[in-house]
Length: 297
Image (cartoon, rainbow, N blue to C red; front, side, top):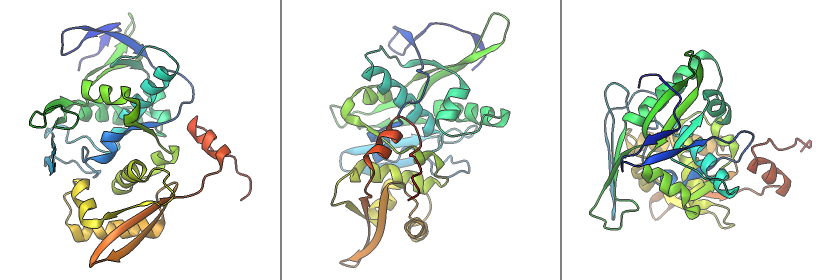
């Protein structure tokens, strides 16, 4: 998208003007959209993926397609959507109006998702925005008639904002209506651990989001069949390789806030997970984006 001077409204696909929502400054809790935590919407590989995701389970259908130029949006690119969801929920909770049209700065997004702020990091952010815009999704999720599919890109458009002298002011982006509607539904958003952003592997990032969604804080924990997990991940690797990588995650206990174990039941491997006890003060610190105090434990 070509650089343009700052504007305060943009047309949506419905032909109406969107009011500009200026991102909130200061620490806020990271929130994630549950639909994105549950289903295979993103590539888990750092290498470019152009092979589509074609997932069907019961009445749920998801097709994700990428362009050769940019490749499929990755689970690291989805951090931008976590930032956007966090902004929208925080503003809503404060009683402030929100919009799919958001103005912010690259610095604000990068620091929120625990990235660097070098020129290289800025360029990577722009590449991520390009992938989010060029990746197309068609899904039956949240459609009143299951035979209907909603087709969208994660970001309808984005641009760099410039002042009258051509100096950078920040960026503007327009979120997909499907994503925005899900975030506005309070029941479809969960707070996640800020340590999520430090997870380096695509599979462990995906697994944390799935565990957070299904396991929550239930004392009894939750479990999944490994074959079921392989299907829901959308990865291209064979099941044997997937299981090997999963066992390594269990060995390292890589997911913040959860204890993982593997078991074999009725001839099938299962992943079991349960939430670890969390100090109430530490939890409050994490909710506002601050690190827990090191008390020597």
